[in-house]
Structure formats: C-alpha cells, structure tokens
Image (cartoon, rainbow, N blue to C red):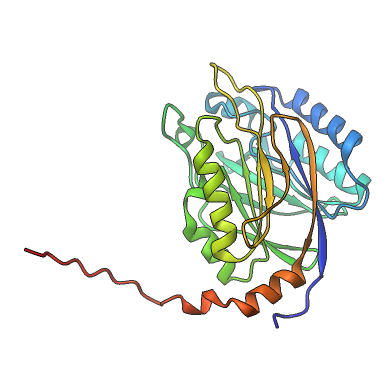
Length: 278
C-alpha cells in the first residue's frame, strides 16, 4: 500500500468567462461567484487559465502584474483566508525579472503564496502567438496540499503526455489542467483530459473558461472532474459560470493501483527499430 495519506478531499473548480484585458472586472466577478457559490467545507479551489485578462495574447503585456504586488494574487490570498481554503489560482500573467510568464499561483489556507507553476508549453498556432509575449517555464511543479500531491499544468500542456507521466512517477495523486480552451477543438479536450487520467491512474481536474473571447471566438466551457478510470464525477456541461464540486476518494484510487499495476510494465527504453521491407 502506498504511504498513508488523507482519504478524501473536496474540490471546487470555478468556470467563468473573463472580460478581455480588464483585471478589475474579472477580480470582481471572481469575488461574486465565490461569495454566491463556494462551499464552506471545500478543501481546494481551482481557477481557469488567464482569468484576469482572458485569452487574447496581444493584451498579455498590458495585463502583466508584478508578482510582489499583483492585485489578483492579493484577492486570492484574501479569499483563501476568508474561506479557509487552498487555492490553485488558474493562471495570471506575471512579471519576473522583466520576463512575462503564464503562471499559476498556489496559495494555502492562511493566504501564503507557496509556489508558482509557469506554463511549460506555449500555444502559438492558428493565429495565436503566446510565445511572442510569454516565456516558457522550464520544469513541472508538483505541490502537496492537504497531504496529496498535485501536478500542475496549463491548457496546451495537455497535449504532452510526458509531463503527466513525470508527475505520476513523482507520486502525483491529482492532475490539474487549467485552460482557456477553444470551442472549435471539442474532441481533443474530451479525449486528452480523460486519457491523462486513465493512463496515469489519477484523478484529473480539467477546468476551462466559458463564453465569448473576441473576434467571434469562444471558449468551450464543459469543465470536468474525472476519476482514475476516466469517469466524469462532476461537470459543468454548458457555458454556465459557476463552481462545480467533487469529493475524491484517494483510498479507492490507491486500491485500484494495487490491483492494476500498469506502471510496473513501463520499459526503461523504447528504442524504435525501423525496418525496410522490400
């Protein structure tokens, strides 16, 4: 049996539609949704990618906040203390050493900033140019909250199973992808978020923004919390703004891993033999 850990944990994940380039308006919206819907007994609150400014790369520079005096981080610290909850702060455009990062702040129940994860893979396709404004993070970050190990990823990271397998090998119990996923790509969102859970035998939070972006583009909505078998245990099926909840049972997951030890079958090296048959 894996080392003794907390048996159950209650997750709250907030889906929203961000106003483009308006940090103050988006902070106000977070406050209103949290005040109206956040359960007092939740352990972790999770927010979506770029909730402070919306998915519009050309606005990233003007929306960038200094990590030491970011209004958005101050808001999250206050929410954490007021509601006695840990927060995975989606992502905020943070400025560090004159470079911009698409960063997820991690804040504990006491309002302390524990860590940040910088998005490792930047989306610069189909007219988007995140890599023009943002510096890529250099490594995955796993945090321990409430006795469980959580692997952090942001949006485009979902297309790289290597980062999720690295988290699982490092002891992850829960994988999180905080996104602003486009409505035009429903199949990748559906398939990859479930696949990351199944192949790593972990719970998975797949949280994205909803509603319009700009220039007739839309976020997909349809955020889900998925179990280690790929079953959806909580979801917001449509474009609704609000919070979904799920209690995850870690003991059930550990027992399943003991019965189905697939990670033991991973080979150290998969050398491809290329054969030419005439």
